[in-house]
Image (cartoon, rainbow, N blue to C red; front, side, top):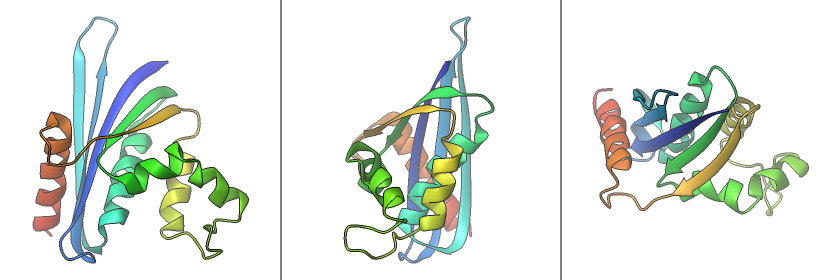
Length: 149
């Protein structure tokens, strides 16, 4: 399977307010050539968490065949449900959290789960605004998309 690096960040001005996401897909082909694609989109009224999820979803939805995907994000909101097993618990409990209330942004979590089908994925947290080149680029894409709405 092809190995892909999916970098993503989300932004919201006002939370809720205008927002956007930025996503980079990067892979190296069999000849050793690096390929990179960037995606971004803005929304007039959204939240930071919705944009964090939307960027990762976009990256997975762009993949045309099963891949090994390394998701790199500065969002604990995106990483912890996978690294701490929350997502599986939510599903087992009918999309309810430990407080028995419906999980926020259910439709996006369900869309992400569907987009991930057939892929092997791991989620890697990086500190935001700390000089990670792709994270900084995704932040720029996200904030530009939010500001252009």
